[in-house]
Image 1: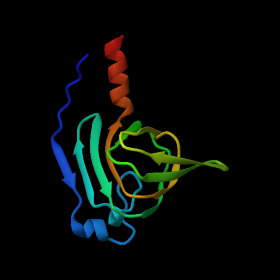
Image 2 (image 1 turned 90 degrees about the vertical axis):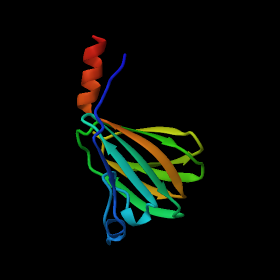
Image 3 (image 1 turned 60 degrees about the vertical axis):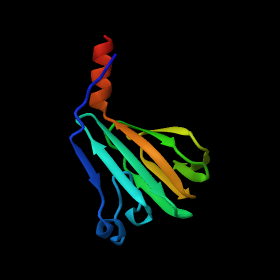
Length: 136
């Protein structure tokens, strides 16, 4: 199955946006901690490239939404995060080529440590429904 999508727009945050006090990207990460923050927007999917050399990124938090899912591929090792869910917390260490999936329908809260280089794909619920419809 092939799914062709128009990818009409790219966006890079300006230095002023990145260093604005408290400014966050759409995934809850402080813009001031990102060395690279690129995205390609499509109708049903968004591709991101996010990098940081910061040893301590800090808290990342996003509320539950109906955005779909985020699939991430780590380009380097050394990144670690503690993910909080209810009254529990789990530690996750990312090596090179580690893959993770975040369900946007769940509230997400994590403390990020260590530099990272992620390629991310946000897949909307509409895209998943479209794929399911094509598969019949």
